[in-house]
Image 1 (cartoon, helix red, strand yellow):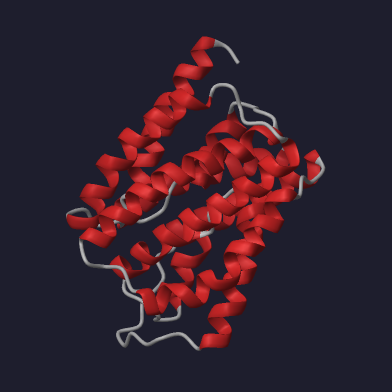
Image 2 (cartoon, rainbow, N blue to C red; image 1 turned 60 degrees about the vertical axis):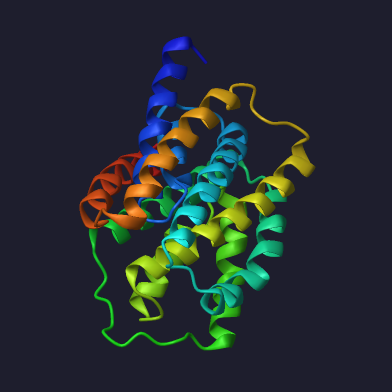
Length: 244
């Protein structure tokens, strides 16, 4: 990677961490989008995205928890099977073309969810336990397999089904992303025994962006405009992966 590309990646990571953390996400799909646009190898993209996710997820979890939005009763059924399934998914390395196709679909799905704001039920209710356990397991496996934390799937699900309001969904997703990312990275490192050499400056950029975004997102900013901007990046990267 050239110095110019590294500087561009550092700036992109800062902006993505800031924007995503404002809605309770850690930014994996955004990091994947940018690294895909820069044509980095899949075996570099996955551990990098998960490492950044862990850092930003920690920051977002703390900020939303401090703001009083977290619900343990809503969180644990989704997380119970998600974490071990994320570890299993993190151990698997798919063929390059299949990896690109799967990531492209994940990014396009994320873009669609950001473009189309789901109508939230006015009556918030707890999810059925069995549905939460099964959904968490599936999201966890997919998060480990693709190098995302699962928030891009969990947050829309919580809102669409009327299981949480926007702030609570963000708070629950932040910790969900953090734990899945830890499990996914552990699975990946156990299989590859390596981390990217340029990770440290990206972690610094992600920490700074995450602190800014999580603070304002948990207390001040509405997420709608941010989601529209993120959707454009995800759409471009997803199409690039599927068409290349």
